[in-house]
Length: 223
Image (cartoon, rainbow, N blue to C red; front, side, top):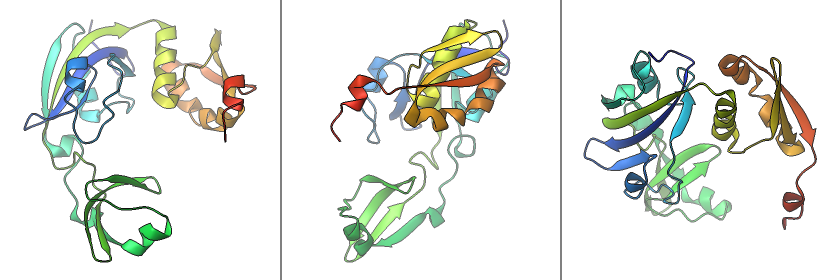
């Protein structure tokens, strides 16, 4: 069974930089080695994704197409095929007063969200803060060990995988013919609607959104 574009596959993997530091994994023992400030409470479970649909690194997508499930592969990626080379223009100086106006205390080594851009504080000196907006893995050669567990054929597994990947939620749904009807709370209706084309591309189903009331637990949360 040869894997093809748009196939759903389940994998276990560990990604590490060339010096051996782990930065991502689905395996418990490797998750415990995570660096770069990742959440150490990430659940260790296999990753299900659709090949060739930008759910994983393109270079890994390209590598797995044509391979056989049930095999373990080791891949080395140079920066150009991973997260790109470092761009010195993305290392920028921001006046300290900008942080003070927003009641933020910049600390060397901290990663902060700047209007959707993640930047790492390199230094704080006088009234200047040097921030690096490069991806934290840019300029690095990466090693991936990938165990292709199986090809996914079950439609429900595919739907649940996409809901988890795009929305981090397990929506209730039903399939009627060539239509996928997902129950979505009102605040998320517009967001889910943005992915109609993706569901059509990957599942061949028209996405219909059924708006429901917010759950009691959510509506009673303190503001």
